[in-house]
Amino acid sequence: MRTLGRAELEAMIEEATVDAYNEDEQLTGLFIILEEHLGLPFTTEVPASR
Image 1 (cartoon, rainbow, N blue to C red):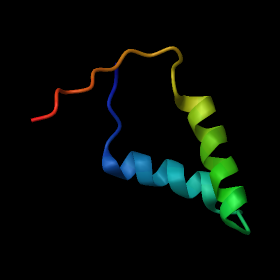
Image 2: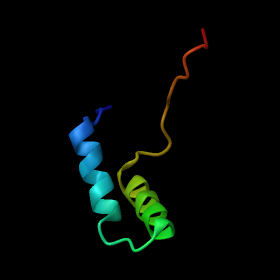
Image 3: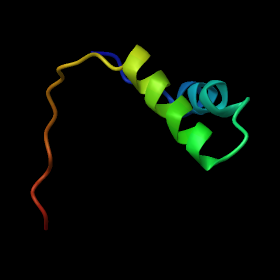
Image 4: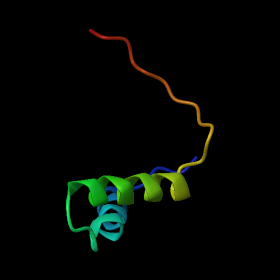
């Protein structure tokens, strides 16, 4: 599994929101980008709280 760097994540956010007119369109753009680039299903771990 590949980890994206900060610059790559920021570029994806910019791509998703560049033409958005309001917050609803920004959220929709982010959802679409996640849907396109996030491999589902995925495995993750949540660290135990300290």
